[in-house]
Length: 234
Image (cartoon, rainbow, N blue to C red; front, side, top):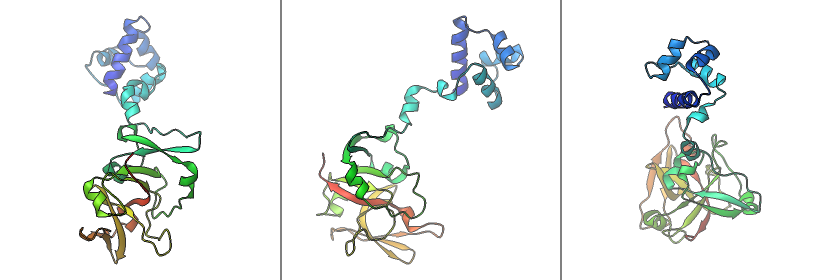
């Protein structure tokens, strides 16, 4: 795709009279036949060859990518300049798996006071430094009722993904966690037992479930984050 877009770029300049195949051959040090074969799709360029062409034409790889594709994969949260922080609402499976939240993952953006977010304590197990800290998910009927009455279907949950340890946040109170299960988030209390994590719902109509922690894993690898705020659907 990059080579084809490079051809289109070069042909555009040739058609506009800004460039010739001979001139490009002289600039890159390639034989004219080499350049001609590339322009006419008879051969490709090596990575080094592409790099030479990009350098002499003052282009970057980003110039060869559709801007919509760049934007789709770009992080979309610039620093906020007021008292509120923008927090992304994403699907639960995205919150469970993606370290950085890209624009293509965003369902909407909600605002939280910076002073509130700063009060939340971190407790990281393993390396979470590259993870975007806060993300919001909305619960479906099943997950919403699993922790009833603490949560409800459609509840808005703010997850702190820099809190994936089992340390109690407040003495005598169980942390409520988003746990990575079947590729998405299950909302449960967690109790460790040897190499197991016991997932307990608040609603006794739901079953207790178990996750096995592998030999090369930490408990925190299975924890998406602590639920630090529960609100009604907005």
